[in-house]
Length: 228
Image (cartoon, rainbow, N blue to C red; front, side):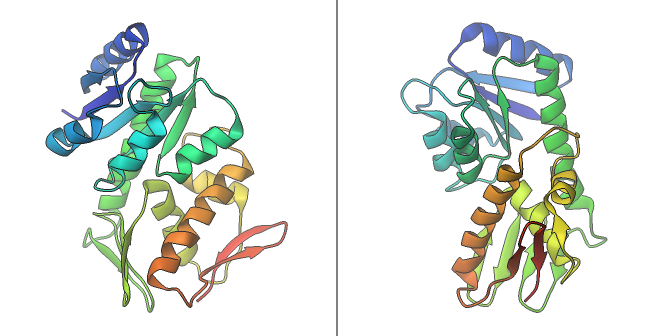
């Protein structure tokens, strides 16, 4: 049974989420503070985390940043702050998705299932279950790892899917709508800025292992393409 960690300081919300997730056959654990979350995740290794933005002790963005230093576990941010910059900042720090309060618990369960399906799709995509080879990069789907001669980096699920999609079709221009369809399979409405934020973070990470190469190119008013 897959385990979902809920980090939420409001008991009524946490209790509601636990009931719906348990009814969907997930095991749940609840923490009501940002303090100690990283230590618990290291020890228990949950399959997914629902992480509130506003937490006592340590806020959700700091918790997300801490977890991303040692784990690629999928993280869905929960937030009542609807400003776009807060959403994008959460994603930039390594969150895989966000849900705005107030929300339907059924929507949360659907998002959880969608993120876990994407993770399962990555591990089962190739016949060998592990890598895609390329002249500059090697993509490890099991560990969401990208390798090059000068080192390796870890990506979020969304970043990995974006890179894999672009790289499978060198030179092809993908519009933002096309990339959103590839990344968000549950047909939600996502702003262009969200894709731009993911691409910006992905470029920054790729520059760590290929500092003299620009692989993802912007095509003005259209979208992006992969071209070594």
